[in-house]
Amino acid sequence: MRKRISSFDDIERIVIYTSHHTHTVIGTGAGDPQKMDPTASRETLDHSILYIFAVALQDGNWHHVKSYLPQRATRPDTVKLWHKISTQEDPQWTRRYHDPDPNKKSLGAKVVIHFNNSETLEDEIAVADAHPAGARPFERPQYIGKFDTLTAGLIEASERDRFVHLIQGLPELKAEKVREINVQLPSDRIKPFEKDRRGIF
Image (cartoon, rainbow, N blue to C red; front, side, top):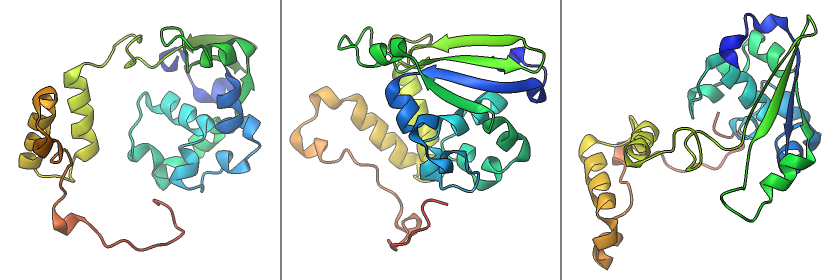
């Protein structure tokens, strides 16, 4: 959808038609004003489909750390777009969300973008591209790539290789080797636990 939008200023409003669960837990149906608050914690933003959709639409990607940074969440153009987004329950998506058949179960939604000139842009997706039924299902190289992204700057290359090698042989591992399935961080990168109320940021 992003490539079909000339300017985000041309958008009047965006409606995400989705399941009851998505609407009431991470959407406007929750009635939680923090889901629209650019100063909210990372944990709250992670449970705001409104924020996530706005950033993903603008950036064309998503990063597990950078997309939640305070300087990203408080960007004026992002806040402006974010506050134009709402969710609405659609019985069809609720039914698909609860479908007991894993081949039919869907966590998706339909998005309708309304422009100031009265034109609309619609699209929908049932499952993530990386889902087994998605457009580009993850295979072993993609899972290892995700592991590398999540651990970048945290573990040594030797520890990364040890862990990946161990996992690759999981079906044949003996009990003592199974106990080694745990990523080890260097001691100088582990900070003492201090209880506070600040959240991640």
